[in-house]
Amino acid sequence: PGLAGVGRALGHDELDALVAAYTARLFAAGQAEELGEELEGTICLPRPVEAGAERLAGPPGLC
Image (tube, rainbow, N blue to C red; front, side, top):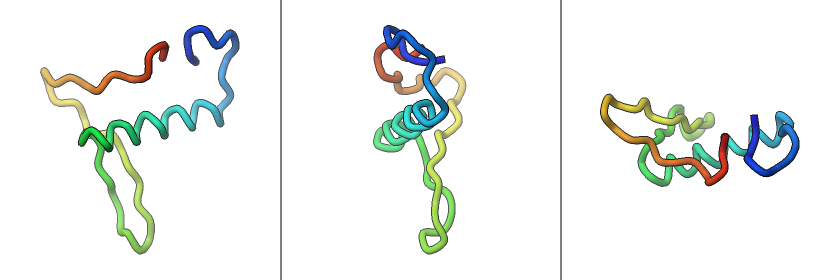
């Protein structure tokens, strides 16, 4: 897994950063939600895609 044109496999830290950035992009577009209590910490997760709905596209070149 990785990005087209990178020329090598991405490490787990790089993949983690990529997923975090994509989830932030989904959150900004209203396609993710924040779960948990603000005082204890929250996590953002992508919302399930409903039948017939389209997901925000990932960065160009994402495999």
